[in-house]
Length: 511
Ligand code: FES
Image 1 (cartoon, rainbow, N blue to C red):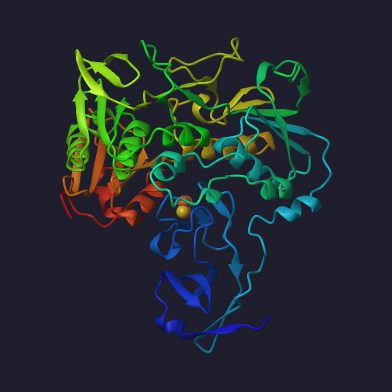
Image 2 (cartoon, rainbow, N blue to C red):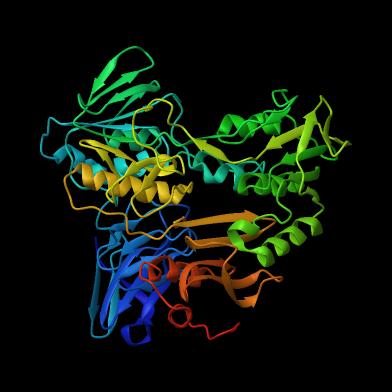
């Protein structure tokens, strides 16, 4: 394929760092470091964010939307959310002119076809659970050349989904394209040579390296990763099992909620969890009258602190959401929710009370105080057995129920299953979207400690810094994607507030 000259681009004019350009119909990302120029696909493999809006940070291209990170020299995937690396395009610089091949160097950045060429291996690796952790683990195993069997076991026959989109997109918009939901569609599962068993695991015997399935069969493994995730907490009150009382965890849950959606009708959300408040935002978009009932006086105060929590409450109220806070529900009837002896009309009730890890099948494995499986820093539970995601409490970390963290865990556990030195050293990251405001949270901090702010919290254009002993433990970033992307890497090391601010170009109290 002939190289194409990038019109109007001379090396001298190409900025250091990231530049997005369209060459013909092809969106490309140019990375210039000194006089070295490379080109990659211009959009993120996860949800097609324009990568030029991200950052180049210590040899990483970091996506602006969900902090996926790629090696700036090779395009290889370094951090999820994506499952694949970037397609790379050949570049030559001749006499100060930049030439690029618009055909990628590989037709598939993950090169799953290479699985065919992987050295034969008679080991059996089993991934229990079909969510984010298992998808990431499966991709890494094949990407790293594992040629043995990889078996996914889970009770749901459907393709593993990108669950974050359920409350952020699928419920809000009729126009949402559901074809973007599968994490591992059938085609990718085939390319990765994944085997599926539709069953629950009912017991694990680490000594025998054997799983017992709900079908009554047993499954021997050489290495296994448990990633059974969490289940929404049910409402244990009168009426909590009525058909219009729903939770949200799966695509069928989305459809179950939509069946009760009616513009102008009333809905009640029970619980001020992220899911609960995202659903409140979705139902306002669907023109419903929405009331949120919660035990906390200020939503999200525990996670984000009272000031951000109050701003979020005001945002919801400005869109029409009503609150009954500092209280709990007495009972639910066919058309109402009773709280403080007040009857709130409700043809739809959504419980967003949080989740509990699914661990009933491993009663004898050691649990941490937070309810997760105790693991070492490589997420190892026992010889040949690892745990990842919502069910894992790794050494030095609490149990954290975030989707991207589950993917990070999946990659660490998979690397350890392959015998590599592996240790969870990533930075937790999650995002929430409510009424068009996207907040990105990086790290693991506390909302009731010291918090410093840059920008305007009430205008939703800010960075909040969570501090312990003068060090930054976490940051909450709104409307400043590049800062969030930079911090997703920068907070791998302990930083003072001044250091962290300097890394993202902010001065104290700056805008
Ligand atoms: Fe890049 Fe999601 S769009 S990580």
